[in-house]
Image (tube, rainbow, N blue to C red):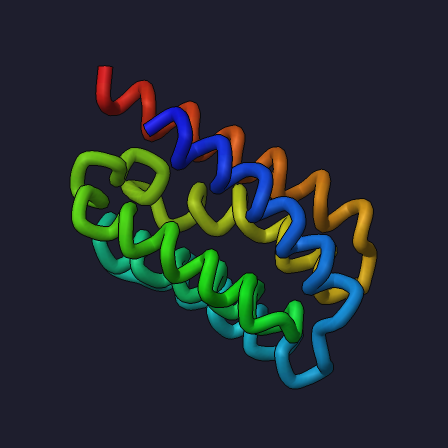
Length: 134
């Protein structure tokens, strides 16, 4: 898991930064809608899958298909074991609260804030996931 989490942090922060610089108005609106789906999802599995869709939309917002490919590759490794990593998604409001600063920074076009917010989000969710495995 260590290697997956390292790449998740590094690539995720870069994707958020690029999305903030490149997202269209339509993509920003989509991100807000997908974020809202995290808050309104019912159950950890649904929250987790809604969260995945936010990250896929962030990758698309970069305008770089390789980031989309990297994101999907990481999710292909993650999704089969997601039940063991559901800790961050048991409370929809908390999951939304952790992810909201990322979407807000991207929507504002603030690259530096998007990177910092993504790093904070990815570090926090990693810690929760690893604690759940212990």
